[in-house]
Image 1 (cartoon, helix red, strand yellow):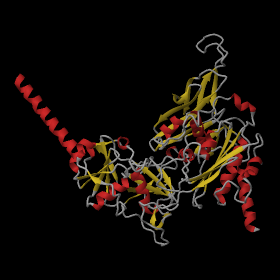
Image 2 (cartoon, one colour):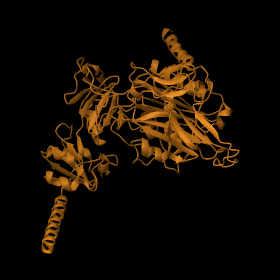
Image 3 (cartoon, one colour):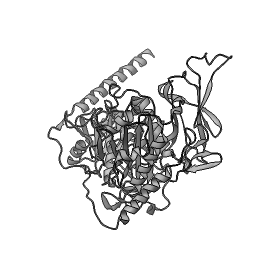
Length: 604
């Protein structure tokens, strides 16, 4: 009974915290909700709904995935934030974080839809997504969009459209008109960050339907950039003009990034301010469809629209800013801390859970219960991390059985040079590191790795950063002289298989090119010849989620510290054609150069 009482108290407090009413659209309630986390997730959801394919291209690592096809998921109108659904989602996220649990039913077993209906009675049907692990609204949104339920922490595949993509289906549902988002954090629970999205089919406040701006906030694509984002959609107004974000009193023009003028996502991107929090709001101008042109100087019916209706948004997490909103001299702060990732969705016919906790062939480590953890011997050290604008801003992964080696292997496959572990179960990848500087004390990284308690995997807002086995992307023509052996595999070429082949042959470095060739050598290529990693994104013949160089580029790996297997596919056949082609090209170039010099001398 005592346990039940404590559980009831936690749920009740969650409801109480989320239960103060919002006075005007875009404003938080008296407890500051929606917080920056929830507001930012809302604008990202609306970005996907308005321009699915463009969102996939610009803001995810899944741009090469065949998902969000317009035949299955066409553009749909953005969602309004609903206060009652916000209360329902907030209460559930708080319940999951504090109890803790991770499920659609409340932690005390209360049915999902009974819980939602206790807050929201404006439509019969409601649907729900939940996620846990990531604190970033962007990473969490992409987690739902991908809907990977494989359980493989190295997987970069997404569920196909119309299959086991219940989260994506809920987000893209044309029947939904409103949403509530809830976020809660607990350092004591193993998943740390808990998210809930509740969707409804009818507006509880009919006046909201007249507002063309549904959501607006800012996100951090990288540690070095801040993106102000807002949506516009109206069937009764003309295309908007003069879209602006007013930051600390200064107007900055918004650019249409995705969609169309009358149904689009407008953005302004800049570098973060390093000195102070900044307030901001969004404005547009438009007029009714049946009015005269806004260019007319007489009888203009132009109206200015503002988001939020009143008050000011703040650049939360910019230069450690903790303010998310201010109104009438009162500041609302979000002091909820870190970080990231399992997910589940529930609707009238769907319910699934996904927590990445399986082992991979690239990780040969097992869990160890030793009480004396040590920092990874190949670590570059403990570094500071942003609360949401993470130092390593490439691919991300959550794994309850994480080790530093597994994180390095994942980042290597994603063509990133550096890996960073955090909170014991989060893996971040990037091409550069150190934006926030090194931690003052290495002991600030103190979380044991989920997959090996003798290792340290970062801390709260701290990263244990290491160097992955990926060295870089280079020009094929300028690099071939550094390799001594080449093999081809029309069906089984992958990063792992190539590294195993070269290591078994006694070579320190392996390179992949044209999707099917593996080269081995002992000479390190020079940095001045390095290309952008995007030039090495040809798909391997063995896996559509592995990258094997490019048509004229080669991706280079170090085999020394990689956990390669002792075997490789038997269809790896030695092939000298690349070397012959290179030699022929060099001979032709030399002959051409000689003839050119001869002609010039003859003319003199």
